[in-house]
Image (cartoon, rainbow, N blue to C red; front, top):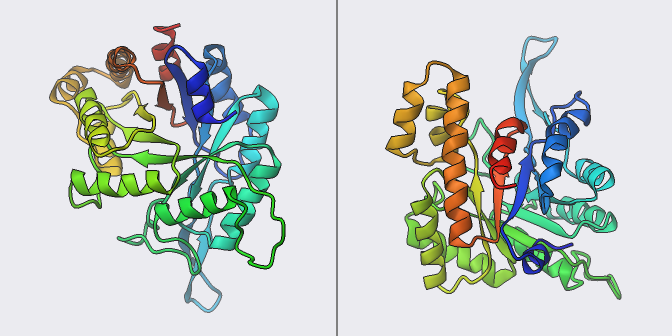
Length: 317
C-alpha cells in the first residue's frame, strides 16, 4: 500500500520507523531483533536507509597507496524484501543520487517494482566522507529533484531507452526530505522551501522531515510550506537522544539545534542510562504535542536501537 493511502485510511496518527542496514558480514537477524519489539505497535511502514560507498587507501606490494571503493553496508532491495516477507509491512527504500548513474538507478527501481514495493524516498545523499561537497557519479543525478523526475518518468512509462515500446509504467509513491531547520547547504529557509516546492511540483507525494527536538521549528516549517502552496503531508521525524556524546554529535552530523532545556537536563545526568530516560521523556512530550497538532504520522529514527523508541510509543498504545 502507498504511504499516502495509509494516511487516508487512518483516523488517528500513525507511527513509522526507520532502520539502518547491518554492516556487511552481519546477519539479517540484527534487523529483525530491532524490529520485533516494535511490531506490536502496528507501524504503517518501515524506511530502510542507504549508505553510499566510502573510499579507503590500501598499501600495494610496491609501497604505493591504492584508492578503493568500499560499501560497508548492503543495499536496500534484499532488506526490503525480507521485511515484506516476515512482517507483511510496507517497506520504504531510500534511493540516493550518490554513487549511482541513471541506468543503475533505473535497474534498482525495476527490481523494487517487480517485488511489489509501492514506495520510495528519494534523496541526494551525503558527500563522500573525504569530500567537502557532493559530487554526482558520472552519468548520475546531481540533485534529488532530478532523481525524483526519473522516478516520475518511470511512473509514466518513460524509461531511459527511447526505443522501448509499450513500456509498463511503475506506480511508486514518492517521498522527499524536508528540513525544519533548513538544509545546511541552503542559503536560507525561504530558498530551501522554494526548492522543496519544486520537488512537489515534480511529483513528490509526501515529505518526511529531518529529526528535530523543538516542535516550534516543525510548526513554523509547516506554516511556511502551506504559505508557499505546499499541500502534501509533512511527516515529522523524531529521535530520542540517548547519550551525552550526542549533544555534539547530532548537531555536527545533522546540522540541528538542541533546545536549552533539553541540554540542561542531559548535563545533569550521571550516566547514559539517565540520559536515555531524559531522551524518552522529551520525545514523549514532542509526540504528544505533534499528535495534538494533527500530524498524520510520526516517523521515528531508531538508529538500529528499538528500546527507547518502544518506550515512547508505549505511552500512546
